Image (cartoon, rainbow, N blue to C red):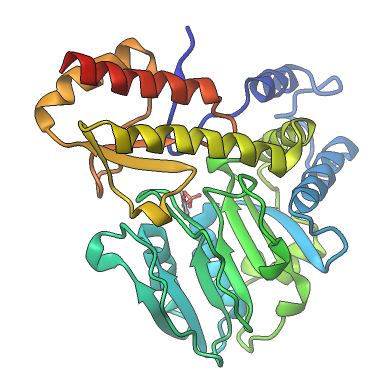
Length: 352
Ligand SMILES: *Cc1c(COP(=O)(O)O)cnc(C)c1O
């Protein structure tokens, strides 16, 4: 049975990747990938491949960046970024629950200036007119707001280090990635299973704070040990590597962005056309990864939910802080799944 998986995360990954990953559980050069040493030649090769593919996709090879695969999720990066970079003052743009959490963590390390926030509107738009203090140690943004379905279409130009939580749209669209000094992303939104976090950091921004940083949380330790200060999440890193290979063999970010644009325009056109539905996010800030919408009339909910179920649509419930529905359309979700969803929305119109 084919299930159309719109889950926000952990999310759909390519079927090919599932197949290769399950094979490696049984036989990875004779042993299971789950029982080999992280220091073995075979796994070191996996780690190197995953790191170099990540940098290659982002166009950051030989540009002073290092790619790390760490444990702890994106949430660990909320504090790790501040621990390593915040000496006195940092600037944050508050565009959703995840930015808000990053701000809370950073406050333990210094002054945090919230340059803009859409909290008062339940984060349904991206604040645009704001001033960034020029003496801040860095500016932190969230490129895609997974819960609210908004996305930064333009990356702010700044003269201080730019730090970005790219958990839910990394590798989904082309950007000039050299404008970022540190990018982090939990694997489970667009890259792999939960358990690994990718950090891409420009080395020359490190080593500037005066506090003592515990070894595990110090990017410089992690770089000097090549992400193997301790046992890294071996299997999630292996699966992330497979997904990055899949992306490469499918034409890289440019090709996937094309499909992602098609998927997004398909669903948003239907949300706008169909009188039974309304979108949540401001039109100009709509995310290509997570489309948030709801029914205009709750009396249609039962029928819509049943039609979705009959069509094998899964994971469409909105986050509890927004309600309604959320269609997450990460790289591995086929265009066909969005077509199935749009047809169900049309059918509701015919039957309601
Ligand atoms: C899911 C998500 C997080 C949290 O990720 P964890 O790996 O669960 O810590 C942080 N930021 C964004 C944008 C997310 O989508």
